[in-house]
Length: 376
Image (tube, rainbow, N blue to C red; front, side):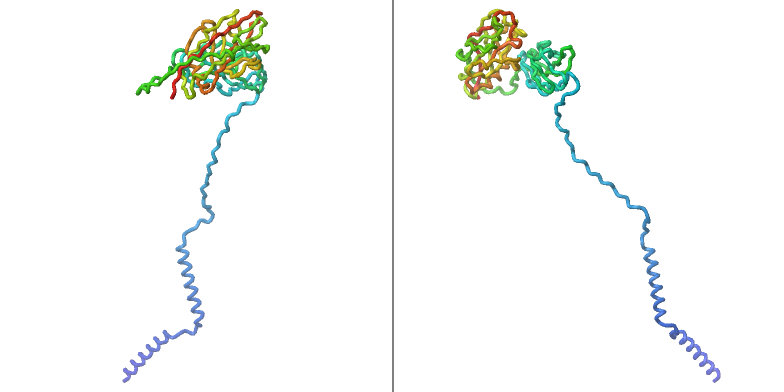
């Protein structure tokens, strides 16, 4: 019995103890909730801090510079220089005739013309000359005086009469200006290619009908004009006993050549002439022909200066008496196809009198141009 009571008491004590451990405490519930929330928040904050990537406190993020290409620039075209403080200086403007690489037939007579500008402080007077310097002279003069004055800032066309070499090839000749003291300046040149007319190498072309006509001068439109304004119906050239210059004018009838004709050959025949005195002592001894559309002849057709761009040249009676084919005349006659006249002026270059008080003239008769052509 006593053992039973002691056992029951021990079990009852154990139950009370277990029950006491599970009973709520006397502390307020709110305080417990706040403590739990704070602990939870601190735990979350620690986890976020551990998960966040490290950041650089003061290192700036480098930036890659960008570059923009500047817009393209174009050099302005060259402009002729203005006059300098140099006495004798020249600027090359252009090739008026026969630009570099021009093709010329062997032995053709040509007139090369350069255009220069005086960019110095001194005027170029007739005491200045154009002289051959080096390279291929092409039978040009060794020296030739300038005509008139070329003041600073002015341009001038300078021409020399040349003969293309007879052998095909590339040729180049250099020329310079020379002042009155003999000082050379301003180099310029001519560069040509001498070659024979091309010959067909493939299928021969279809034969074309070639027609030949003879153009004669119209005597009623021919004549001469003297330096004192006298007009005469005879085509004489040279000077008279009063030392007046005579320039001859010839007018050829182009109507035998139909419009659309292609000129293939021109033979020049000025052998119908006689001579008084010795006209080939005038100027440089060469007679030249120039294209001049004078219409009806009058005193205003006289040319007083030193001409350029000669289409024909004869330096002595032997050349004037020769009947020869002239390649440069093909383009001259071709340019007049479709018109009624081809007119030209004949003269010796300045000075156009030898001042000897003697009549020195070439008197022309029936001169001719023998022209071959075909129709397309």
